[in-house]
Length: 70
Image (cartoon, rainbow, N blue to C red; front, side, top):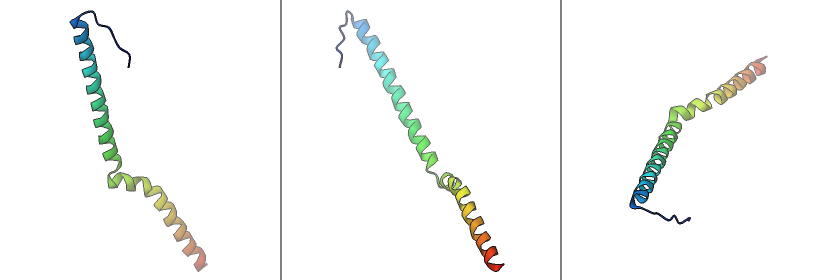
């Protein structure tokens, strides 16, 4: 870690304020990431992503049955 030499208490206070704001920003980023992950893991979203695959499988099964009857 780089050591900074301060010449006044005002510089220290300013740096502490900056660090506090940076920490708050990072906390908000983590909260947003958690919320986004929760949204992505909802069952409707998971099943929504599987819908095209399910449709393809269903169509292929129906096509096989129709071809077997002919």
